[in-house]
View: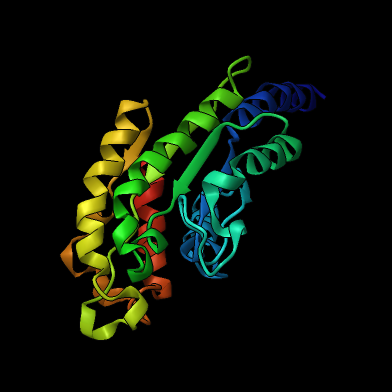
Length: 218
C-alpha cells in the first residue's frame, strides 16, 4: 500500500514535467519536408515527445508564384499558415522554416535579389501575428546543397551558385530579426550534394543526417 501511494505521488510529479517538456512545432517547408521519408518525418522519430504540424508543400517558395500557383508562395499564405497552427495547437512553441531551394530555380534567377526582402517580410508577419501573445521561437534552416550542374535538370542548373549568393542575405536578414539560424549546408559539408537521388532531393540517409543536425541545434 505504501509503495502504491509512492508510485502514485511519483506519477503526479512526473506528468507535469513531460507535459512541459513537450514542444508544439509547426514546420514551413518544401518537398524536402513534405516527402514521406523527408527530414520532418525523420525528425519526428528523434523527438517522439514533441507534436508536429507539418505544412511543407512540394514546390513551395519563400515569396514566388511557383508553377503558376499562389499556394506555393509562403509569404502570400503566411497568415493562413499561422491560423492553422494556432487552431491546431492553441499555442505554438516553435516555427521551423526550411525554404529557399525553389527560390533558386533558374526561372527566378533574375529575381534573386527580391528573396531576402520577401523573407524578411515573412518573418515580420509571423512576429506581428503574436504581438499580444507569447511568441514562438522562429528557427530558419538553410536549404541543403544541390548536386553538380551536370546532374541537374535545366530548371535547377546553377542552383548552387544562386544558393551561395542567397544564403548570406537570408542569414543576415534572419539574425537582424532575432531568428535562430541553423546553417545546414555548412554542417553537411561540400559533398552533401552527392547524397541526392535526383540532384535536388535526398536519399533516406541524407534526410536522416539533415534531421540529426537540426535536432542537435533545436
